[in-house]
Amino acid sequence: MSLFDQFAVIAEQYIAGLSNRAVYPSEKDIQRLNQLIEPLQDEPIPADHVLNLLNDKGSPATVTSTGGRYYGFVCGSSLPASMAAKLLAGVWDQNAGMYVMSPIAALLEEISISWMIDLLGLSKQTSVGFVTGATMGNFTALAAARHTLLKNEGWDVEAQGLFNAPEITVITGCEVHVSMLKALNLIGFGRDRIIKVPVDNQGRMIAEKIPVTAGPTILCLQAGNVNTGAFDPIDEICRKKRKHVWIHVDAAFGLWAAASEKTKHLVKGIELADSLATDAHKWLNVPYDCGLVFVKQQDALLGAVSASAAYLPENGKRDPFQFTPEMSREARGIAVWAALKSLGKKGFSALVEKNCSQALRFADGLRNAGYHILNDVVLNQVLVSFGDTVTTLAVIKKIQEDGTCWCGGTTWQGKTAMRISVSSWATTELDVDLSLAAILKAADEVISSKVKALDV
Ligand SMILES: *Cc1c(COP(=O)(O)O)cnc(C)c1O
Image (cartoon, rainbow, N blue to C red; front, side):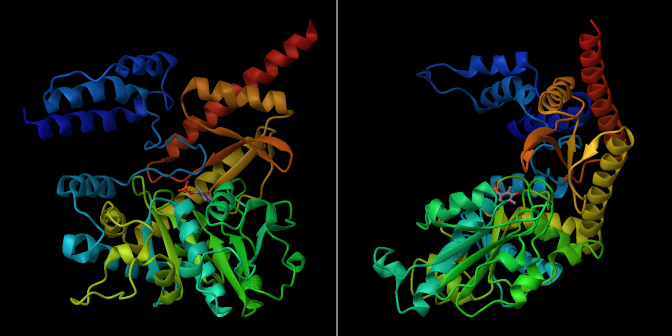
């Protein structure tokens, strides 16, 4: 069998086995990974041996986040067309840095950019960069903001740096995502000098509490809180935007709500923002790693991250590296193109709507069983409490050990909760039924054993 025939067999087996195995690997399978820890041998070994070794030790120890019953964090899985396209792109091994290095990579970025702009209702002029994830999307957008705000003050930050530059005020909500803070500290704005605006019980920024500033200001909004799925009042805030304020929206998964008639009201006004960051590897169900940055003014993005002053090369083609901090990189546009092409507009809005209604089914099932849903389920995120902290943590542990599905714990405004994020194309109604039953069984066992312990 050729190496790639062998690969195809392994891949088929893995995918076919997804629904029959525990979502989280067993302790035994994780322990077996230690067999990979060895000194590098002297001699070369055949490629098929390497592949077999990886499959033998690695496959059983994977977390099946690409299956339909993984609800941890906000992840998404991989659409078959997108996964296959990414594998082919790996075979091609294209360098997506420049048009001349890979016309196909550059073209598929351009095509998917225009499709996304259309799908999301953004301005046609929007500039887009393909980065590793929303963290780098946030980072890149902040660089564009910094470039523009300081340029308006007569300061060339790319040439002169940040020392002695005019101050930029940075404002976020109190429920800002940790990755936004990371991006802010990487870019030199410092975590501790951020002004944090109070939020409501869903984590939405209270617009009236946003301070009015005089000098250059970056206001970071959020579309889709990682816990509740709630959106800041983007439209209301953007409409009051003043000239010296740059509005950025961390829309890591929430941006995709724009693709459905049922949820697009949540992102109303997003086209007014100066920049957005999102993930294709979350709700668009593109394999890792794939994030996106959208910047309304091309000069802002290129001014910040382009390597040269001459943006357009002689051949007049878009060079992808001008739009991202990276130079050589994988051809991320290929997997995005394939995901969009395979779903079409209707397929993608149906995916968003399916996951949202599945989230509601989880919430209803848990509420009907007497458990407390902590958030308004407006999107794909559900927060549930099973009682006090100890009980909730014990239920989460039991669910994870059971392996039917995987949900993680979180803290929501001081309360311990379990988070269910429904973000996968692969999640079926049966997956929801099985998972809900497993969750209720685990909760029941934890709570009845506690009652028994009290009896004695
Ligand atoms: C996931 C997430 C991020 C970070 O995205 P990465 O892809 O992990 O870099 C940022 N903000 C929000 C709201 C998220 O959900």
